[in-house]
Length: 60
Image: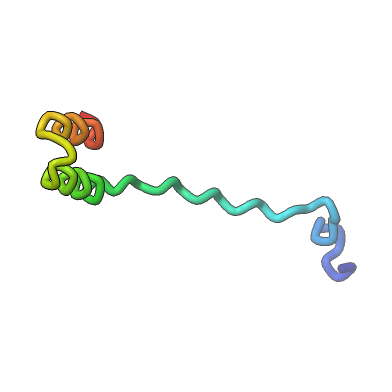
């Protein structure tokens, strides 16, 4: 590495920067609401439970 002179290219203490961490996955509100609607349609949850969970999902 002598051809580069004293530019730090052959410095054993030099490390490449770590890649940026992946962004957290964005919630899929439509899919969550679809599953919730299916639970309501199947009679697993009632209207009140559906509305409460829908507001929670949407952050209302």
